[in-house]
Length: 96
Image 1 (cartoon, one colour):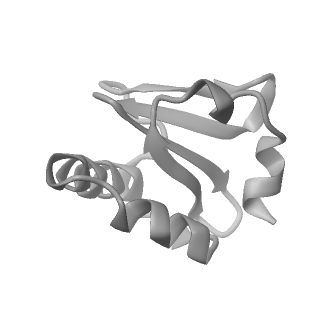
Image 2: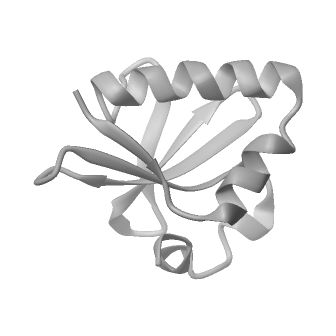
């Protein structure tokens, strides 16, 4: 089982701004990530050729996260809707 960590107040704010249906999806995603950081029945893949940062798609919701296998931790770096500007930024900065 993996621990889930929210990396910043910005991510907490993104979660609070989600609609009710998206919050339910987020809770479902978190439960799955605790068991397996790359669940098969969701679109889970590396982002922008950065193999350490993953993106999980659940309907319209996107969760960007970093897996720390050594400490068995999943660090959530961004939560939101499908937005083109999410992919054009330095995604590593979300995890600092």
